[in-house]
Image (cartoon, rainbow, N blue to C red):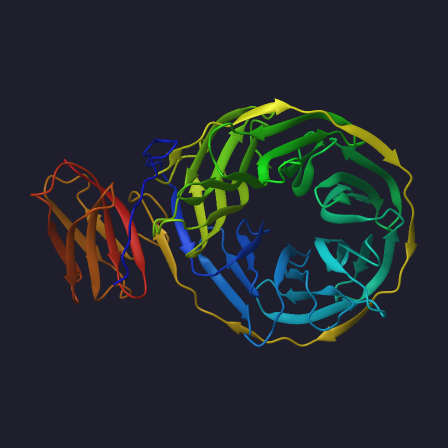
Length: 510
């Protein structure tokens, strides 16, 4: 039997236990989550580094999972959805050519594998894809770095064949993120490397023929940058999330900067997000605009007990309103949990993270509650200044080639664990499996099994400190009655588990 522990971190924090309606924490056993997108059908699609694609439907249920066969060394990095509702996945590493820019893999909307294209330069050079985004007619653009350090832009049709390819004359620079500017233009964000401990943020405006219209360079005089995420706000402005490194001590992830610009690349405001409390690191990896035009961030918080997924809310000027974090339920000391992507959907927050158990999804209410959450370390913001320089930009045609490659993908069944706090949560999955009543209870609790998923199973009751107060082994019983008369009044977790599933619900003894 797999042991389940609920662990509450006390260091530097005040615990707030909250059981918001219609919220959950769910884990899938796929590892090293790299990217997540919200799909046209209001679900999600995720990719893992080991060559996996997971589709989750609009009710947060598993739809399909495909995984690259173990004989390949290709690593997935980014995913987009094309206009035919299919998916294109890019890899930063091309295992087929030393001169490769990378490869892309195409699936249809049901997860059926269609084709793979690799892109490479005729002579040996260093190249890599950093971003991919969709174009008209089911095509896409590749944004990368190569040809002696210059930015590369390649437009491909729906079969992955190259339509045109351009390289900027501005070097050395690395391109990270691309975002739509208008129907015929897009913005590319990246960084210019000055030395090992200093880079500058750069922004290109490019048309859909690959012509570079303008280029701006943002300099903060002594901070190392990593361009983490870009969003377009509701008023057609743009916010850039940057992870930083101390230029004197070279300690990574000591703060995060957000630059807010208008459509011409002029800075409207810039703020640093940091904490003065004793933590090892903080790195925000993703953010999204909220309904009140504020921001919701997620990333990694380094505590003495390990790295935790952190999420925080700011107002429209990036002033911090609240900060929280959550930990793995299967807690082992010094485990790693990292927030990768955050979304708003139907007035809820969805935080995707990678941890020791795999991929996890936390559905939270608009105030960040849902899981047994922790009010965390106090974050503050400070104004910062940038120098902005406009630089002449031009481009020229280069000579990348493409060719077909055949890969093998397997249909895989993955296990998931869902943690629910009341009977109103996630009815499509949990409440079709079992029911329990009455809740609250004064002593007797009846469990009724509705699915053959739970035949031989264990029933465990734990208190909010994670201590097991009752354990029962049940065999072939559709209805089972627990006697909780002898346990103290309070909030407990009811856990039903076997070698296939693991469900958790909140109960109250009074």
